[in-house]
Image 1 (cartoon, rainbow, N blue to C red):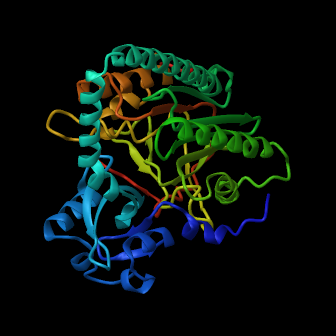
Image 2 (tube, rainbow, N blue to C red):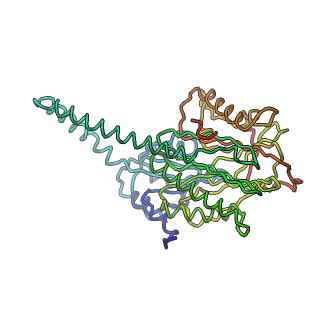
Amino acid sequence: MSQIDLTALWDYSPIPQFVMDRSAIRQINGACLALLGYEFDELVDVEGWEEFLFSSATQSYKFFSFVFEGRRSHMDVEFRSREKVLLYLRIERNLIVPDEDVYLVALTDLTEIREDSEAMQAGYDEFVKVTTELEGALGTIEKQNALLETQQQTLQNELNLARTVQTQLFTRDFSEFQRVRIAGFYEAMENLGGDMWEFYETPGEFLAVIGDVMGHGVAAGLISIAAKTLFKKHFETLSRPEASRDLGQMCTALNLELLEITHGNYYITICLVRVDAENRMHYLTCGHPPLFVVREEAKQGKLLYTSQPMLGIFPEVVYESHSVQLRPKDRVLMYTDCLLESFDPEGNALDLQNVTSMIRYAPQTTPDHVVDRVLEYRQQYSGSSSLPDDLAVVCIEVAGEAAEDPGDQDASAGTESESSRASR
């Protein structure tokens, strides 16, 4: 590993970002301070910061409504710099501490684009007028269009090839696993997806990880492949007798390795589990939706998570895992956030408790049935077969004999709530 000052990556990120809760800004990087024109002490842990940072009360209301309640992926808001310059900023946010409503907010400066839009439109209108008056303009435009179509087709072919390669990388024959029964679904919203998964089995344990990279497209797709490769390396290391089985240690090391790749400009949320020889499931989530565990006799499922930030952005985080005892026929649902971002016509988000009966063990059913029924329910619930985001869903069913239950160790980490087939 090259010598990089990992503690400085957050501040050196070119993306203006800050971490906030409902009371104040709790951390801010240098790019954000430079954009807004303020010093660190003028914004961090300062109450009432919204009164001078937004151009109006309306803009302040839009910002807080979007961060804490909005369902859209982004929103444009007017800020005012320290020099009273009006800034038009696009904001994106990610929940990093669910229990405390702590969000990471990223800013994109659209000021120049907005100010120049009228001039650009006027220039375009003049261009159209002149070219239509020129005798040979039509022929020239037709040639240019033909060239653009050729270039677009070449780019599309390359993206299709990249999608094929990524699909092959994430395709798994789940019948190869003996310690558990498992099925999964993976589909990218665009040509290249930012979701990932990896699975591994030794004679004494089974490991699975599912993740979601920030954004979409080529960059997210490449980072998802890199993350899969890193997890595969760490999983294979566990086959050595002297290797640590602690998932927290694994993620702490893997976080630094991802930072070498992302330099803090991208992150990935993950859900990681290890089922040992006694069917005890060790788990952790990093900025990712909870696991959903459904026991054979349960009327409701149980949500399990650990309140920890995503990987690839904060260098000094030490991750921790928790565990829970599973029994034969217990089923575990792992998924990316696209599943919960399915809304009915009234705007209500999908609730996993409504699919408890679809997941719970029953004779003549398998994890394949579970995945199919959950996907069908998602489509019926949203009224659309199109996906709003990349989607990965995995169902794990415990097989074999379980040890005596010494008691779950997840009281502080989990909560109970009344809440193209790429791999078969």
